[in-house]
Structures are given as structure tokens and as C-alpha cells.
Amino acid sequence: MGSKNKLKRFKENETFSNVFQPTRDELVNAEFALKGNWNDTVFKNDHPLVLELGCGKGEYSVALAQKYPEKNFIGIDIKGARFWRGAKTAVEDGIDNVAFLRTQIELIEYAFAENEVDEIWITFPDPQIKYKRTKHRLTNSEFLKRYKHILKPDGIVNLKTDSEFMHGYTLGLLHGEGHEVLYSNHDVYRQEGSPEEVTSIQTFYESQYLEQNKPITYIRFKIKDS
Image (tube, rainbow, N blue to C red; front, side, top):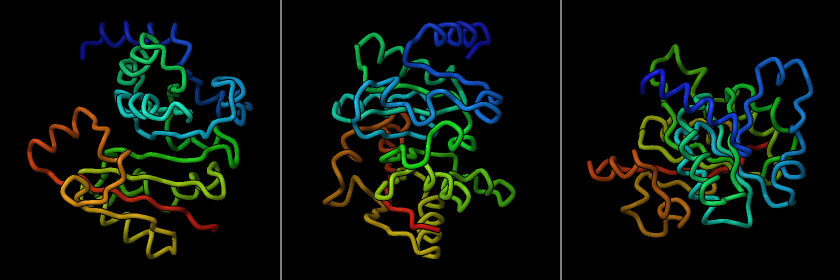
């Protein structure tokens, strides 16, 4: 994407009522106004709050919002020029139960209050295979602690990935740390009984993976108290 195009998207994001772009300083050094108040201020209801981490173009967040109007969704990504597409679609189509937050996932505890979130989706994250990159892996122990903090006691995490490495790593970690694996499947489209919300919504890249016969894996789990 050209820098001109990026700038245009950044500018347009600023006009969208469903896009929130706090600075790092606003999050870390000040009390972020929406922390603990997402439902009251943004969605103006008390529906369950669901996050999609690393939402990319925002297509999954938007599709979930359309499918589940009784829930509120927030797509989170540091790359605002990417989720511009999802934000624009939501505005144009009047989908008012989805919003987008531009921030690093490492700062998630500064953006959401304790027990504010009902569910988290992690869709096709970078598996960060190299050992030096493990600290950026979105299902490592440190990230799980962050998620636990903002999730309600019964909160759920969903991991959907084309990376068998990421699937295996996460499953091993969950079992090793004693978290509760509710459902696990290493090929959701070829095995019966896969949850509908996992197979009925596909990202652009996911449909490409499927054309290449690449298995899509899925884990649904609860994080235990530390």
C-alpha cells in the first residue's frame, strides 16, 4: 500500500465514530476514559463485550457483529490503515455493535477494566516461530495473564489459526499450566461438530488457505486463576 493511500485511510479513520486511537501516553499515564466504560459510552447497552485481537482488515469483527447483534465487538490492531476497511464497512452498513481500537495488544490492560470483557478471539496471529520472538506470541503465559485480568470470571478465549505450530504450542501451554480446554480441533472444516461461529465466518486469507487445502485449527479455552 502506498504511503499516500495510508495517509488517506488514517485521515478517514479520524472521521469514523467507531474508531478509537489513544496514544500510548494516554493509555499508560492517564486513565483512558473508555476503560471500564466501553458498553456505556460506545455501545450504550449492557450486551456481552467481545474482542478480536490482531483484527487485520476487521472483516472477522464485522462478520461476528452482523451474526451476533446481541453482542458488542471491538477489533484491535496497531495498524489502522488495515482496519480502515472494516470500520468503513461498519459505518456504511450501519453496523453499530462493532468498534475498532488502534493500540498494541501489550497495552490491553490499560484499555479495558478488570472483568470488563466476556470473550476474546485471536484469529490467525503471527506464530512468532523463532525463539527470540516468543515474547510476542499472543498465547504465551504473559498474554494469558493480561487476558485473565480483563476477562470476566467465566470469560472465554478462542484461537483460530492455520499454524499447526501455534495450535500445538498453545495446547501444550494450556495443559501444562492447568487451564481449561473446552474444545480443540486441528482441522475444523473436515471434522464434524465444529462450532458454527468458527466455520461460518472466514477471512480473506482463510479462504485462500482452504483453497490450498491447509487445515484450520481452533481451540476454545478458559484461563484459570493464577
